[in-house]
Length: 432
Image 1 (cartoon, rainbow, N blue to C red):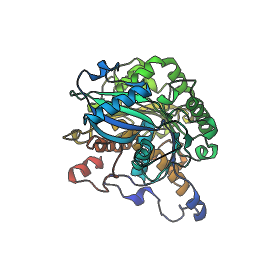
Image 2: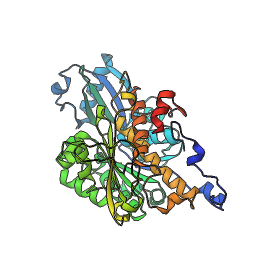
Image 3: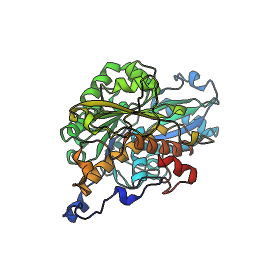
Image 4: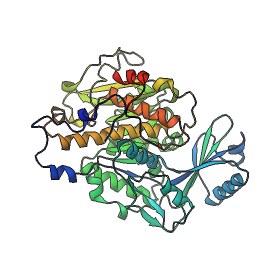
């Protein structure tokens, strides 16, 4: 499992100092290190449209909404005929994150969901599989008689993105297709708020079952919120769900506002810590925030300059590794913030998926934690019940770097891993 930038891999995996390796190499070789995610499998279709196109077709500008399958097909055929379809990619928030996780870590991930049973050359399901990393294990998918789901992204001249979702088979995943043993051995379970939109859908029940299995096995449950309008419409439900089931919540500033009612991102992250143990909050051109908990005994003060915004010296303990609140005898809240890497790409080709990229980096670090616990069980690091391998500050740098890479390309899915070494300017950035 690789980390980018100026880092020596032997410092991370594994430490080979005499007496610190496990005496059972066969056990280590068979121990699984993978991420599990449940997704509404979709193909993303990006289209260039006129400024008034969303309103003319009954779409709420800038939001993600369900549209009738017949309407989606008509719009797609019309735009395809006009040459307005820019590209068709494998999509889905969780699907993007699983793919990026596997590209970054070079490790396996497992996708759970429903896919059309009959796959033919060139169809939507074929395009989904073609554009997904071979390290994403699709063998646990549930076959469905329905067509593949589609997420049509309408890009207006002002750069605004509006999504119309054609459901197809995306909600057909049954609780019977949730593999208990696979989830129990995972480094984390990743779900999205989209899965919980409708309590009558099979995928809702499947998601609840998977979360129950993960919680019983102390596998971290990670929830990505998806879209502000959904969270706003079911605010009480999601706050209750997060409090009962979720270890880490990932969101952008609009979703944070919908969840907490607080516009200030730092204070919104602070409020979310009353619900979850770890919070990732992306704020577009203003970078990202991480918030978490640490036991006072293990809190590590930063050597960076202290910053004050809505909280005084909020980054004081950013060199700490986050923990579950229940594992802290004297819990302290910890925060870090980072501005966009190198100020962001000179040309932003795609804003869709930058948050998913940041989350993939965080999930990689969660996986690295389990890897290290197994490979080097006697390490002093493993005497602390931390959630992650790295500190809040270091994770934010990694997440920020991955977001930069996504913004600089056309697809929300990474085409390749990050470079082993950066140029001199980037190396200086990673030295902090």
